[in-house]
Length: 579
Image (tube, rainbow, N blue to C red):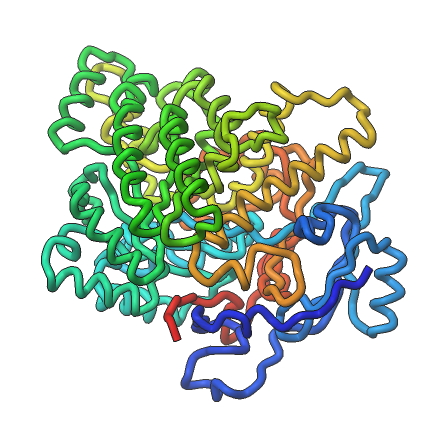
């Protein structure tokens, strides 16, 4: 089957501008006339026994794709055999990369849309934590082709046009291996006065894809302020006028309430265990914040980041059902989406290593029963679980994101004595919060999904067709959570990325879904700070074999190497500007 050709996605949506890297539409103005054609990659084909085609092309199945010299998918061939792909590539005189199943070692290579991480803390300015050079290399080694950076880690934070422009300019000399877009920040200074609100509108016009706000107080060292519910309302109204989303860290409490609860939880706790940390961040704070967010869905697309507490799902279900009944085709304004993270799905308090500060995050990793609810009520659909909890509103949790939170190793306080006679015990209360691990998000997601499948939908060993069917179901779900749904959150992106179809950018990931092993046995850690991630020495499912950005192989998993270019990286900074 040869799908009918259509015009390129870059022509369908001109609102996203790409700066730097090898992109045919825009580049560094000093080097090339913006109207001149640029060859991004050599035309080629890719075949795999498991290609995650979209549902309207039959879903995951054997097949092939062809990629043009502009880095777009120019044809797809669902149901093609490897022989058919070889014959066609010879006829077209283009190279074929084949990932046919090798039955001798039982590999199952999946060709999937590149992952889109809508929530990571990276920046070029002000902090020596994780810049774009290392972040995009770690991302591509994990199959991630697009990153959306949060405003928090930049100094100054990207809450003004000047700060936003500084961050963009700082990125122009960085060789990147994935594309990067930026969220702006909503804080009291740009929501509480008329002048500040004008600045917030200008920030969105300057190219920020939307805004991020915190309802939970941050430590002073973060350099970022919390908004009140009334200020969040103002930010939502502004986002609505620009048709851009508002992302919210959804825990609601005052600084005093936060301090009092922490004092209560840690008082008398000799070992300062992770249970103590969980007690210091009760689920009701998430639920109260989610209620605030859900009251604003008539103003703009509201997005709840890193959902941890399954007690929020009733509130989310009610709101999504109301939205669906009042506006069945809601997309941006009048919409609610929710993300969670692999660490909330893979880990639980009952099985965490004793006082390992690398697992500390806000909101916290919770209990095993909470994991099950996030999976069964949150992520999996009616057809997956057989339940009717979601009714007609679809999955309650739409997507998965990393919340990658790097910092210098000393801030983790991994070897600091707690001051209670513990003799070198790590100080969980004082340590910086947030898990690091862009490079391992795909593997941790596959591992968590396999664990849930084994608990609730086991397949007998040697299940044959059943095993193959389950593999393809998992592939489709992971592509939905990590590619399709994230592309729909980011304005303008869903017509460019997140789908293996004609006209889309050839952002792709090939991974071995059945591999089990420790990531540090086959790859180096590519993050800025080594040793801060919990994942490299864990037995995880999945291994990235190859990552392409606009048709260029940016990461080769067999040799654990990235493509290097003398003058440019392959990745670009993305800006969202209306015509």
